[in-house]
Image 1 (tube, helix red, strand yellow):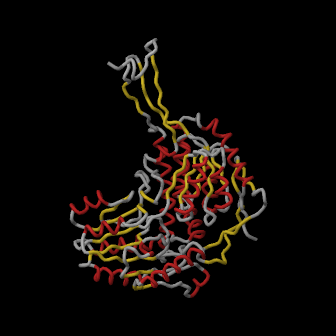
Image 2 (cartoon, one colour; image 1 turned 90 degrees about the vertical axis):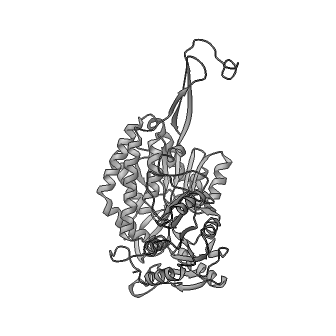
Image 3 (tube, one colour; image 1 turned 180 degrees about the vertical axis):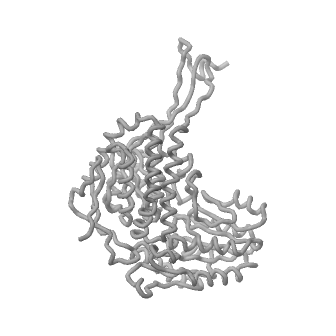
Length: 496
């Protein structure tokens, strides 16, 4: 008998009103049924938003340091349950245990960092232009926030959104991806144990086109924070725009790693392998393009292929495995379709390019690490987000050409350059069009106290993590106190 999980609304675990459910299966073994989850619809969303709206009246008045203390308790509980959550996550989304432990650690780090911000939720004071008048600005909560999160970081990304939202005094409805609902259930159990008040956080499972769309369009939701594809992001932005609703979008990437002729090739090799094939290429920051100076391209290409062919594929719960499955069958079909596109475009397939169904892995969504050579910047495999273990090698003659190629896509999330020339490194930092730039490091890997996000089609300009996330989840209010005892008219009484 399959386990049956529920939504969390107004402090209670409840079924979807329709009684409908959907399966959650292990992508490494599709015969492994993790459980049945509520296929929520408009009624469930209405209940969750109503609960959050009711709770907002009291939660916004809890002092920010007290809200921070609750989040600190959440961090301690996440640390206690780290291994359990990592195993839940690997089973339901496939990435290896080393990575899911890191995913949980991001949630822990975010909890502790956010807790500290409870005593640093700063406004500003400034001098007034008029005598006997005080001027300052403070932060105020927005209201009910809808948090729609993806499956590839099922703990890190929800906590990136949820914890700052709560610290600012907002309440929330979380709609996790339908591929990773179990991790979200565990997060809500921990929030409940930590003492977060009833209604402050609600959990609604379901498909994006149903529960997600209903949440984004709900009139009582004041802010939508979404991480996912650019196509869905545009739909959400349109829905929010109709009601002038605040929206934060973190979307796709087509990230590139540049390797110059003076680079440490062994270091660049490790970065390319980790960037391209970590999380089976299923990161918005994954290295999808490898831009190589022609002088070192033959040598580094040979090194890369040799190492890629040795990557151990399998169930992420096996500690010896280096890369797990893709998330589901449509994802694998998409990756394979792009491999065929690359061949048709004239790129040279060096390794991979095929479904992996060896031995006991026949029932999982595995795909071999894939490398293309002789890729030109205009090819679709060099322009479009594949979201899988496919790396395209592009040859360049100079640093200037490398920067031009890197910038030549619709996206601008993460970027990387390997060089020992400090002048080149600083020019790259200046000239690369991306929200994140690494020097002598891969395109993946973020720290929770720095802003995360990108430019162009990667989003709508907001940044998650760091201090910048508080500008998403709070409103600025300017306050003037005139103690002169008379009417003073700014820009009139102070004019000569």
